[in-house]
Picture 1 (cartoon, rainbow, N blue to C red):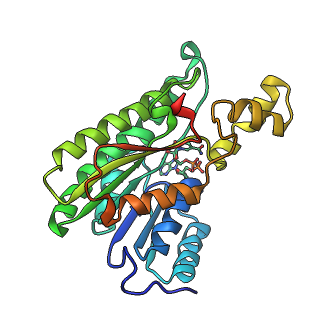
Picture 2: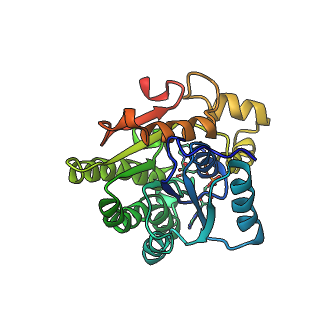
Length: 264
Ligand code: NAD
């Protein structure tokens, strides 16, 4: 076990990361824990393995880690998560789902779920977390958007709309908190190999009759000029940077981690 010293940069801060029992959220939680923050992990499940994940992370980094179940598709659950945690200094809105279909075939319930989990949850958690941040006199809000917050792809109407919405929300919250010691920013990853991306591979292989490596290189990373996936550690490291003193004047913006995708 490594124990962050009391002068670790985020010692004394509590971070809530939504949708953090897997993928990017889990990676961000590890990086924030490494920097000394106490962590609140979240998802909509309440399994033994969720609580074990928290216990293992606490042991690994020597910080307090709790797991709190809350369904980010429900506004009340989003707000209850913040209250159950006793508020936070750092809020990372990361929970997200994906569904791929043409607009004329897009199931309404999938549209509603994507907008609720990928966009509206951030509205609810930010609204609930801000009063706590104001009381604490410090706050960092980091919204995990996407390259799809800046650019579109066909068949991802709900996801693209939600992620563009997250960037609009980020700018608005930044302006509303501009004179306070609170910042609100977004991170826009390109493709990161996580369960969300992994789950798109089999269908894409079938659709294009391609093997896995060809799907990764020619379909998934087609628009990512570096031809490399970004990593969850890189997204986490960027979140830690946005929580640092150097990033004090960075608010209302987005940082792309997309191997040049949005430079084109
Ligand atoms: P993932 O499927 O590995 O993780 C998603 C997380 O959200 C999981 O922890 C899951 O349990 C949680 N979640 C899903 N529905 C939830 C709900 N109703 N309530 C609470 N939690 C819920 O996916 P990921 O790739 O790690 O994605 C995380 C975020 O990063 C998403 O917002 C996604 O849009 C964004 N993102 C991912 C990529 C990528 O390439 N993987 C790229 C850009 C942006």
